[in-house]
Image (cartoon, rainbow, N blue to C red):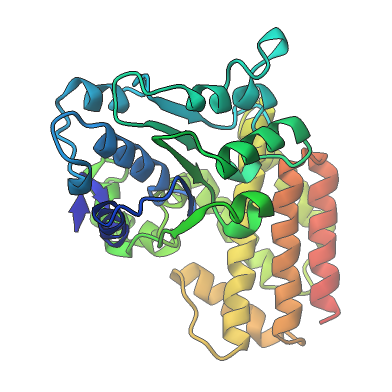
Amino acid sequence: MTWQEILGHDRVVEQFRQAIRCGRLASTFLFVGPSGIGKHAFALKLAQSLLCENTREDELDPCGHCPACQQVAAKTHPDLELVCKPRDKSNIPLELLIGTGDHRMREGLCYNLSLKPVRGRRRIAIINDADFLSSGQQEAANCLLKTLEEPPPHSLIILVGSSEQKQLPTIRSRSQIIRFRPLPQETVAGLLVSKGLVEDPQTAARLATMSEGSMQRAMELADEALDEFRTSLLAHLSDPQADSVEFAKSVGPFVDQAGKDAPSRRVRMQQIFGMAADFYRQLMRSLAGLPIEGDEALARAVQEAYKAWSGDEEAAAACLDRCLDAQGQVQANANQATLIDCWLDDLGTISRGA
């Protein structure tokens, strides 16, 4: 079903309708779920619903035509605060939350949220990339926590992240958690075709199978170069005796092809580590006697690894953990060449010692 062109999340829509009708709408929400499934789009549509000038809040059915709806769509509504991690930063900057220099505590999200609504019924803040709120920025963290503990009247805060575990415990404990499910494969395939992102339904269906319910992941896999590299990566991972040093020589250049700027290369590395994590996740399932979930290429690679694997699920889990650690190290700006070499070497050591 579809809610205001947001696909796959009607369960969450009803959850909000019920809360508003019962007068139990919380002041802070934490949206969690895989990337690319529409959490941020849902947050914006929710904001539009609550600020719409022609419909009641409990209807959650914005008209889309009034000035408020149009301003939310354009992200210019005076009662809507939007914060996200800049592409060239590893964390959400302090100044976005509490201002800069002489304007400290007199600008930024926390200050703006404390002001009275300009034209709507409430002020709404959406913090995208909440995974990148740093506990090291003590002043900003304290200010944000105070805002969450004592939210200004008529305010609503929505934090958007990928999982509960990546959030600061103090933020997690002060938020009502809304879990978003991955999109159905048919929904992903339909969107790929309707948006003109692929040429034929067959390709869309194949990408949807690999997407794990994420449009973002499906679009990444539509890149022919990435798809080709995935084939060689799966071949390497499925062979416990593969030469890690030799394979590393192809990984570095492939990462460099993503672009000259560091953010593009970091995205490419995240994609590589993510594909490897998928492989070990499915290998764990296979070792546990569960069916493999994924496309034919992934299933074949896992089956080959299963035949030669001398360990158990714990060894596969250790490899999965190493891939997830590598993704975290990318976010911490680890040296590219060193990270790739160490990652592949560690996977080889775990596999051979399994």
